[in-house]
Length: 345
Image 1 (tube, rainbow, N blue to C red):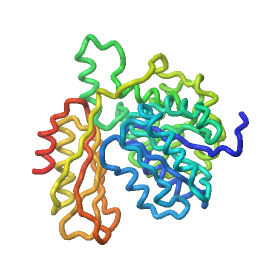
Image 2: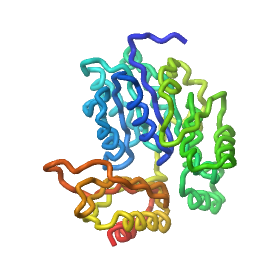
Image 3: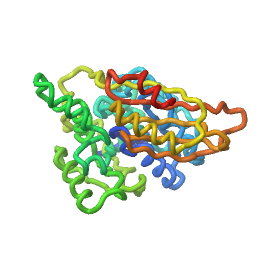
């Protein structure tokens, strides 16, 4: 497949909530040897956590103004409204960018996004270098596609009217079906048996020959994922997904909202509250930034189900408002009031 070298190559990074997309992208931009990069980050929720994490990298080849956040909804649903203007903005940058990384939301289907690269106004200027699906190795080893998936599966099994896999499984399968490379993350948390199980589960969903790359903490050589030159938009019909016969799709099974907290005095105590809340209210993901009293640095929180990671990512800047805000993502119909009470207690 020949690619017009004048077009800017784009890598689409897709994957379920908490799989490790942002960590992978951060590693890539830190190791692209001066290649000038721009990033489009599609958040699910109102606080730009993933974008803020990337903006804090301080990498000269990917300055903060080259990172564009799209927070108006899932990029595959709002591609006409958000994606094209973002591409226009990036391509107007001087000096010209060498590569664009697109981090989709955890709920996005990559195929509608790739199809947008066929539009005449887009096709002449950019091309899809490859689609990378990031999958949670630990969850897969334990029989799930997300950290806390038992409640979703139980709900599906209890409803005799449902004759298809639950929506989370379908999203996972559609992301895999469109991928050119699979990055299986969290290998450092797996033994050899767990790694084999995770590999086998991914392989069972692969409709064609796609390589699986094992990774810990996002460490993958950029040469493996960047510069594939596949012009995926010209091969889109070979990537069959659940939603091929639908004009559009919705994510009605998911919801998100922001919880604003007061300053906390103990980061470990907050982590325990988050874990308990996720377990009790079937929350899929909690992420955000928190002000810890008498600490000069901002606490970053990333939770997948009841598994919580937190660390101080950077100092609060002079004049910056020290806010504590968490994005909560889970099933439609979550008890927001109960979740807010548990986190604020």
